[in-house]
Image 1 (cartoon, rainbow, N blue to C red):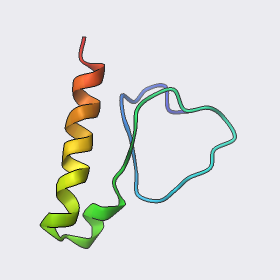
Image 2 (image 1 turned 90 degrees about the vertical axis):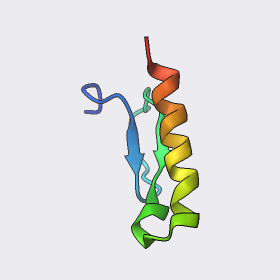
Image 3 (image 1 turned 30 degrees about the vertical axis):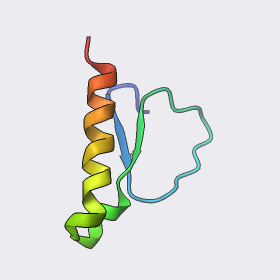
Image 4 (image 1 turned 180 degrees about the vertical axis):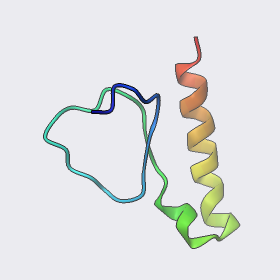
Amino acid sequence: LLSGYDIFAQIANTDFSFPITIPVVDAGAILYRVPAMAEPVYQAMEDAIKSIQK
């Protein structure tokens, strides 16, 4: 189901019945539109992108 994606940016804790083999970023904080809460999400996303670059 997620094999076509590089990163899974979830906005809520999701329990799948299968293992997720791609990086997962908890992105729910960006929904509040508060820069101080969103910055860690942006940093985690950048780190995930850097970890999968070939």
